[in-house]
Length: 401
Image: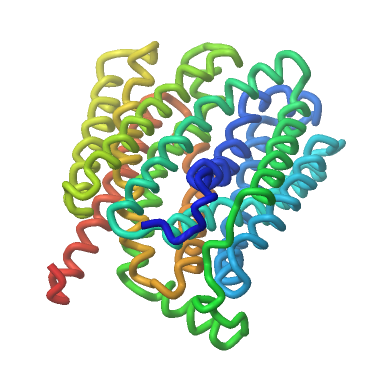
C-alpha cells in the first residue's frame, strides 16, 4: 500500500517526469550536432564531448544527492536540483563559445542527477512489494516516451529556430517540473527514517553500499544492459546521418523503435509482477535482449544498413532492457532499506559512469560502421550477462537460493 498522502495521486506521473530529465537533456539536441559544430567552428567529435561533459559531473554528484536526501528528505533536494537545472539550461542556450557550452553542460550534469536518482528512491519509499514493481513499471512506461519524442522535438526546433532553441526548451521543461513538484510532490521520507548527514557515518554508509558485492554486480548488470541500447542513442547522429543517409527529421526512426520496445518491456514487467519472481523476470529479459543483438549482428553479415531492418533490433533490445530494470532496481534498493537514497544515487552513478564511457570511448570506437555498432551492442550484452551469472553464483555460495 502507498505510504504517501492520498492527495498525491499524481505521484507516478511526477516521478516519471523527474526521470525524463536525463533522456531529454541527452537526446533533444542530438539533431543539432552539425549546426553547433558549424557555429562554434569545431568538429562533431568535440561536440560529442558535450555529452561526456554532462555525464561525468552527473555521475559524480550522484554520490551526494541521495545521501543528502537521506538526511533532509527527498523533496528539498529535488526542488533545488530543478532550480539549478533551469539556470544551467539557460546558460547553455546563451553560450557564445565551446568552452562556455561545455561548462554549462557540466553544470546541468551537477544538478540533473537529483531528479533522476531520487525518482527511484521516492517509488521505493512510497510503495511496497508487488505494488512497488507495478509502479516502477508504470514510471518506466511513461519514461520510455522521452527518448522518442526528445530528438523529434529537437529536430523540429533545430529546423525552425536553430540549436539554441533546444536548450530554451529544456529550461522551460525544468521550470514546469519545478512548479509541478513544488505544488504536488509530497515528502516520502519520514523524519524518523532519516540519517544524520556527517562525514564519518556518511563514509561508513558509502562503504556499506559501494563495497557490497551484490550491489556491485546488480548495478553493473543494469548499467551494462542499458549501455548496449544507449550506444545507439549516443551514436544517433552518426547512425542517422552517415550510415542511413537520413536527415534531422528522421531521428524518429531510431528513437521510436526504442520507445516501442521500452513501452512493451515496461508493460510486460507490470503484468508479470507477482507472477514471476524477480530472478525469473531478469532471465526472460536476457533471452529477449540476446535475440535482438543476435539478429542485429547477423543482419549485417548479408545486408547493408537500411530501413526498417537496421532499427528493428532496438525494439527487441529495449523490450528486454525495460523488462529487467524494475526488478534489478528493486532488488538493489532492498539490499539497503535504511539507505535507499544513497543506494539509488550510487546505482545512478554507476550507470552514468558507464554512459560516460560509452559517450567518450565506445561511441567513437564502434560508430565507424553499422556492423561495428551491432558488435558493440553484443559485447555490452555479454558483459551484463557475465555480471548477472556472477551475482547468482554469489547467492548460491552464501546459501541464498
